[in-house]
Amino acid sequence: MSKPLFRVIIVSWNVKNQLTSCLRSLASLSFDKDYFFEVVVVDNASSDGTVEMVKNFFPWVKLIIQKKNIGFAKACNLAAVGTEAEYILLLNPDTQVTAGFFSDLYRSFIRNKKIAIIGPHIINPDGTTQRSVRGFPNMWVGLLLALKLLDRMPRLAPKYFLPDFDYLQPQPVEQVMGACLAIRTDVWHRLGGFDESFYLWFEEVDLCKRVWQIGYEVWYEPKIIVSHEAGVSFAKLSKADRHNLFISSLVYYLKKHKGLLSAVIVWLLAKPSWIFLKIYDFFFCPKTYKI
Image 1 (spheres, rainbow, N blue to C red):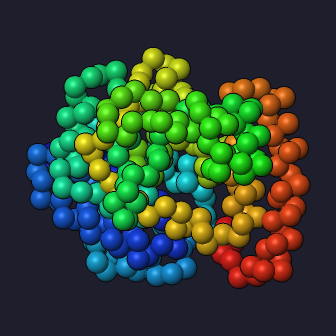
Image 2: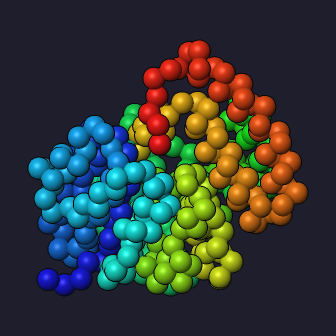
């Protein structure tokens, strides 16, 4: 058997139903011999029967079972070890690929050797466009995110939120969403994969940043379409835990790329909102998953 062009890496945590749909969408493309791919699922200690589902219904999937949740970045790095594929595709379990996905992705890569990362046109289950392209965050963006203002007032940070971005045109971008992100394997290894100091969130932002720093490009490609039911795994966490993980990763990113002062200022501002959410969770959301 010839080596695959793509290694598809999926990290799963208590999303059995969504993962089932994702793997079925991949299975529908499994006879496309021109763009052969392999699939690796890392299960981060799910308790909803995910492991049994994969074993029983998708025996062609390589399954890596973790006894504890090791986080997204570390799980992806683990799944990428030893691959002979030319490209790595990071795919969330709450996504579904569409016909022609791998052929279009491959053609997009070979047209320009400077392209290291490609992000597709991500759509919501209802067919509307999901805003999947951003600029790189700075301290100002970090402050807005910490205060939860940016989603409601995107014009406060137009270079980050890109409210006028044209999702119909292929173009180089600063960063693409990690829900579906393809990267050249040689560039992945050159960068050492994800920085495992990111447990969850901002690991793909950091990866895109480092790709640009070594002279490669990140592109958005609208003709490649993926459906994404956003935030299924994250919704199982309490609001305080989600906020804490998000801010921790944001602060680490700012420290790494914008300096210690930026990171400290954002962390100090975010702390009161975390305390408020902890109190809210204690009284109103007692039943949540623990990571």
